[in-house]
Length: 201
Image (cartoon, rainbow, N blue to C red):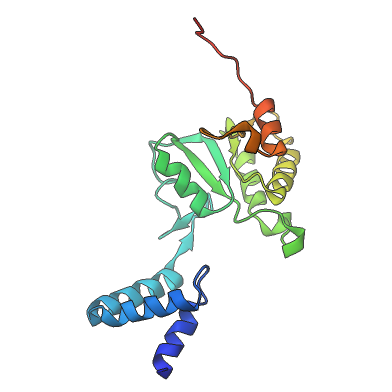
């Protein structure tokens, strides 16, 4: 195999989910692309890695001090949705149903991976709450063991702000799921988050 091809494949395999075969397919596709397109691609990746910043308010990706969401005066800045990663923020934004602002923790507490509370942007969140004007904090993190640990820790920290309403996103059985195949923890959350049925005729 060409040394240059081998080098490209080795570098592509550094990306998550990219094995040897996929790396080879990508490398061969890049080889067929116009050189100008490849140059633009490589420059965009380099610029992204070197120039990207984190919003000083919410820890979202940004080109400057504030991300577009935090600088948008039409957003409800009194409501903060706390998420693990930027990808989670994007998922919620794609629904078009939320008009508040966000706070990105940067992960979840995971002792096995050496990630503790001090490694997350929890203090930054508390600083925002201390500044006042926050009515509600919505915690929207995963239901994994690490996510539950993080939720428990967050709730203990947020007790220091009794005037702030703290909610979590609804958890339970998804639309179309059959009850017999749902795990016990999900059913437990579904029961805890049950709601009254109205307008029944």
